[in-house]
Every structure is written in C-alpha cells, then in structure tokens.
Image (cartoon, rainbow, N blue to C red):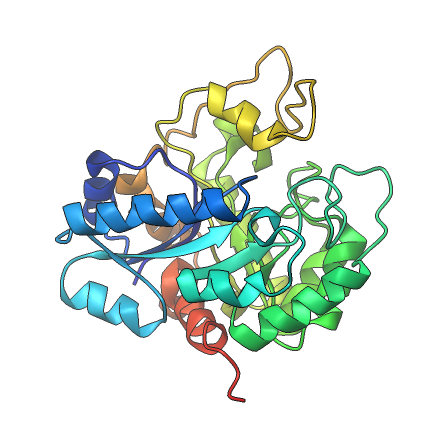
Length: 325
C-alpha cells in the first residue's frame, strides 16, 4: 500500500496517470491555500468534474475503506485538505460543513498568525487562540484532522495537548537534519507522536538536507533515525510534491492576499520559483524509490510497509469519522 500524506500539484490527466504508474493508492490533496469558503467550494466542484472525467484513474476518498475500493479497482483515492483555515473564515459552524463536503485535514496556520494559532514565520508564538481551542474541539467531533505542518512550535505542542484525537504534521522533516523554519524540532515531533499522531516526511527541496542535491540514502537514513526516536508506526510520507505549477504559483502560496509585498518565506526574492526536485523523486512514478532506499539501509519489511502507507491507512481509519453523538 502506498499513500502520500500531501501533494499540491497542477492536476491533470498526465499526473493522474503517473499516480497509477507509481502505484499510489491514496493521496491527500491540498484543495485550498488562502481561498475563502465560496472559493473552496469552487475547488470541490473542479474536482467533482475530474472524478467524472477520469473515473478509471481517480475517485473521491472520504474514509479509509475507500482506499481498499480504490486498490480493488486500480484507482487512486483522493482525500482533501486545507493548508490554511481560511475556508472556515471566522465561522466555527463551517467546520462541519467542509467535512461534509469532503475535507479531512485542516492546517490551523499557514506560516502566519491566523485566528486559530501562530505560524512558523511569526516572531512571537502566542499559541492556540481562544477560537483555536473551540475549533480543535469541533474538528475532533466531526473528524477533521488537525494539521500543524506550517505552525510554530508552541502552537503545535499546545494543539497536540488540547486535541483529544491524534493530530498530524503531514509534510515536514526534523529541524536537526535540515534547519528550516518549516521543519520541526525534537520536542515538537515528540508532542505529536507521543499521542499517536503522524509525521509525514517532505521531499520539497527547501525542507531537505542539501536541498535539491539531497541523496536518497541521506533521506532514508533520516527516516530510520526518526523510527528509532519516535516509533516507526507514527511515520509516513508527505512528499509536498508541487508538480507542473508555473513559478508564479509560489507567490500565491507564500503571500495570498495578506501582503502588498512579495514574501517568499522558504525561498528567496532572487529565486522565487519552485526548486528542482531531487533526481530520485521527480514525480509520482518515483515513489517506489523510497521503498527501495529504506530497504537498502536495513529497515524491516514491517517498518517499510507502514511508512509507505500502512500507518496513514490506520490513522485515516481512526480519525476521519465523526464522533457518535
């Protein structure tokens, strides 16, 4: 089983076919960066048309059992998530609505301070806000997973403590391996994994040691060290693949509508485009290279099977359903 914990690609029939060529059984797709509720609904509509156009390649995923159905029919199950709480605007009632529409993950922040928490690029991390505490409880109730991939340290630790269901960091790496504001320090990863949460390893070059020149061996050795430290059962892949987007999309990702100035965050003003992917992971056809690399450094078949998808499957099965009233 192969599951990718996050991608933000410029979706097309070509990429859908690459998902199948790479044996990807399920992928968590970013459907909103800074869109408001109405704009996010339009993105759901766009995906509904793709499900109609390519029924032999992709299907909508709402629960873990949909992955089984996708595998049985040779398709990839698509699960939706937000990299920002902007789709719920300032209305806690929209949490249940977006879950009903098909959302299964929501980040509490995207780099900046939000109504819910502090982002990893803020100078001061004030933690989870009053609204944030209420929204986490509502997310727990309906089955919308708390994602803290772009959140600051204190906010992430507090979210793990406040949430009565496991939370996740869908796409990041250990800060000690690759110092970047988006990567997570040991105490943050422990706060998440000690309570059954998941860490998905990112292959986005700004998050990698040696960036685009990162080797597969280095990446896999980092995973093995994390398995020793945090438990292999709490780890997966969240590639953060941003395939086929024009470089102009980086500005939308980093800036949205909040600034008149260009702030590329993890990139730089002199090189604002998407970085080159490492040669061992250019698109979904290369997903199997990670499996081979993990085997070559000595991880067990059970550990590899979990990291490649089994752990995400278990996490999905336990956390996507609403609480029984």
